[in-house]
Length: 375
Ligand code: FE2
Image (cartoon, rainbow, N blue to C red; front, side, top):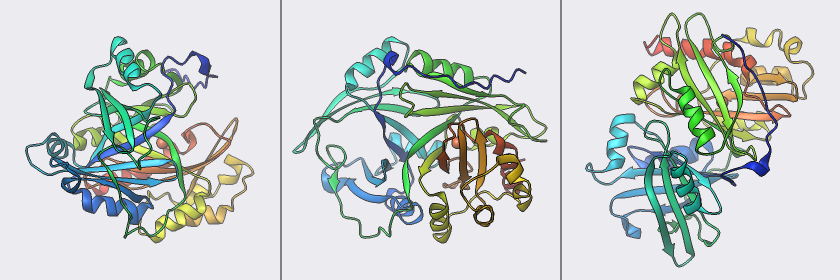
């Protein structure tokens, strides 16, 4: 197979769908009250707003959490007869919505429908004393949605219907800044179809391709393509499994998530050493990479600012591309099923995704998969 590892220069003026950034990521979970505190205590997000029976919403409860520029919404059903409960029953806790902040949600919705998107929720005007927002949702892979959010006429904490809430459980942030990229796993043979969806419907550009020569170990392999919007704020790598001797990690995901869905959310920090130190002290579990990874690190990576012994102690990975280097680390699954996890990333010039770490990483992932009896 041909390695088509390419990075294009993107012309922003040609964006058919201008997106200002990720507005929020919403998870559907089995117990929102408890999960919200988990993301707060373990990962440093702070509960800032709430919606539920007390605010007039009788079908579900939602907590909005913030850290840096990131908003996480944690939603749980109040009734078994609910699309939220159905989602949790099928997929376990997982990402339902990647919301995109736009200047004109109706235009984004109707134009993407014209270009082939499937509607999930038609445009709605949500209003309260702080103003109004326009929202509209289209479907992407699996049961995941993209919701367009237009909020220029709203000055409340999060969205109409939510009330601001002072957290009594917050113990401090961990230095998370913004969402660097958000990765989807899709079924075998479906990667190109979803890349085409992002290109044709949302006007994204293909920026990187990894094939199974890049990402394979003795057992498993995968293929991945990364699409990005014009300003580069939104990057969506799409993975599909490739043939290996044993079950690929993407297949394990698809088996347990019962279909395509969000595999990981990569979060940027300006100081990965302090972020990982803090996360480890809070009990967050990360993938383990053996000490041998660090033996020839200097030869592979060249000069870096950080102390290699410190990186080794915290098990942080490093990779270099033409533009600089990056530091990264992956949590173990953050939910019950081996599906969703976080990546913590610090970019020192590099714009790539840590290709040089894939092999070390996948061997580590396979160890975990073996422990779960899924290899
Ligand atoms: Fe990633």
